[in-house]
Image 1 (tube, rainbow, N blue to C red):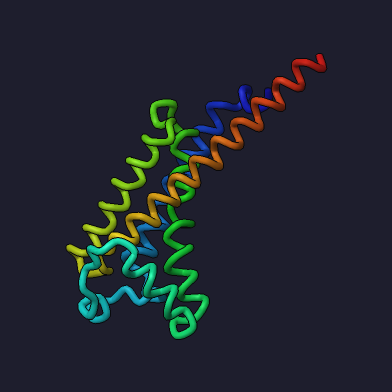
Image 2: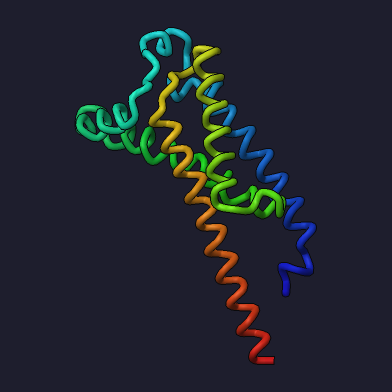
Length: 161
């Protein structure tokens, strides 16, 4: 009931959150020095076109890389795309649907990887494509669970009335 009263305001808030999310993501992916995104370090890496190569490497050498860096690379790639999968279906009915979100998440991830490759601010990695897409899918699944819970609560309230 509360949601329906404020549907438009919630969508506007989601658009604002989405714009902030994209801005923060662009900053951390392309401009943040703290993540080692400099031209010199990016030239040391070759693009990874073999699925699971980097995931396996990070997992096998996790003691050498350190838990934080391993987590940042593996879970971070998932976590960074979860808001994408969660916010898009709230913002627009046309953007609802599990496979649509997966395709859009893959498309955004592919765009990010190509920009990193072209600007030499990162390394093109198919494992990142996979992890980012999984993140978008998980974000959508959380959205779907919230919607399901909301619907059950509304049915329960209607049955009580």
